[in-house]
Image (cartoon, rainbow, N blue to C red):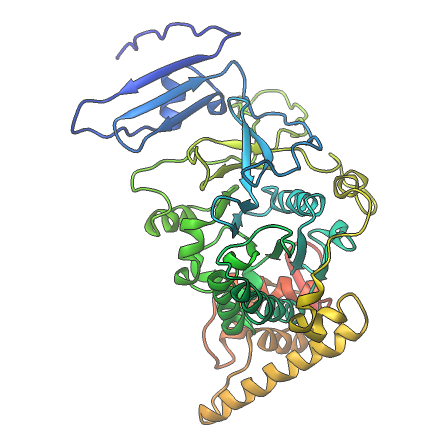
Length: 482
């Protein structure tokens, strides 16, 4: 039997900071759980490790988790500083965490990516950025591909609020036209190769929330959407048109292909909320993070796990309110390996309608509108946004897609080119009882078409449910709306 050397007791009320260096030829490697065990600390969230990817590390030990609570933002946090940044939250050491909306040094609009699993706080993070854009008089075009449910308070507080894939395609087309057909010629005539806010045009921010649904494999508009996102990334920065994708933390191939986003990852503002292991491997592979870098996983809860005897008297489980929503790494910031947490945004508990705290963040008044000189390029879609006439334009996009699908099917000699959502509709229509995603996948794969995975089926079921074509019946069960 081995006896462990006792670990000296750490002070209960002070912060301890250790500066560590390994010998030449070695690289620091560590295991967060093992380190906490060695220091006799039950809550790994009290320990923060930051390395330089090589020989040096700083280990900071806090009396309690420094990110357990976070205040709401102040009005000054929401206003851009002279570097074009807003304050989005705090690092573990209490210092402000910034996100750049515009780079005045280069005259560039920004490209941004937000990744986070369900429940990580992505929607609240997006709402805060939208509110900051309104307060900074930025023209905001926002596509909410959850049917408008992710950020309902944004409706009326942004210049364009799109809620379907067809309208987002129209929005992207208009954005590319504004950049290439309106602003580029005007700026070329002015002899200008960079953007100045308000001289003469406002900054334009184009955002797609739940971007997976538009860009994943099998999505109906993936090819065109991928092209438009690329084109906007290439042409928009120097004419004041930025873009942001907010997505589930899945493999980058589900976002139009990793080559589509590599430049955005390396040069844009990248926020990583709670993620999947495959996402982390992809970020390292794409060069955003150096090989060997370790980020402490963001747990779903801050509440330490307590083991009890299997034969202990029954005790009522405490409700767990120690969530980690908004906790993230700002990978493009100066401290990419330091965990931070976004400000508390909105009411703590759900509200029966629009959240008054989020509405207060947006503030009064109308949002900034697109400049008159770009209205012709923005086209009919921009002119009828927010009106019933948008439905007809979206139907035109649907019809275009249907013709392309039929043409592809004819070119393939009559072999099935049916979309996955169509195959799902057929399966659900043939069964009178609600079905699980696994059952739907099995039935789809039995129809003679291209094999699909359950993850793709779940995504399509979610899209159909948001479009009110499919209803969720109980836990994990789906049925066609008849």
